Length: 78
Figure 1 (spheres, rainbow, N blue to C red):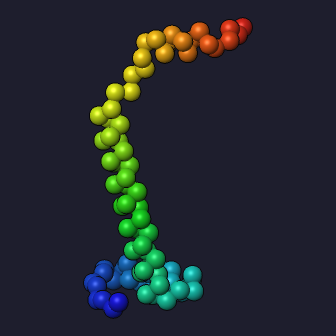
Figure 2 (spheres, rainbow, N blue to C red):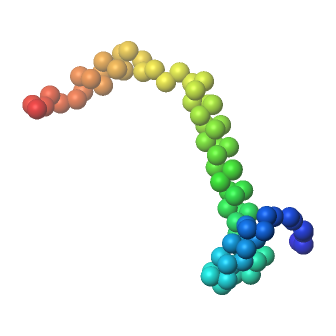
Figure 3 (cartoon, rainbow, N blue to C red):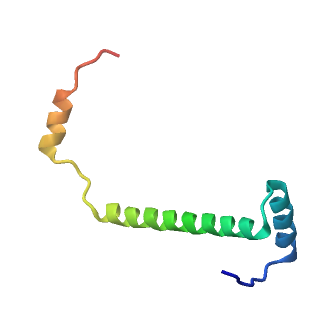
């Protein structure tokens, strides 16, 4: 798909240099950069949602299980 965007001159210049250094076309560089940006945002949203879910969950251990865990560990000398 073809589109037109406006970017600051300095960003354009740096992108041109990077594309040349990487042997990429300008379009390929912009497409890769945009895909990476989208991927990062998606991962951030997943992390935010997981944080919300775990913040709502009761993560306390049942006292009986806590006691059983403690007594199941071997006694070690330090």
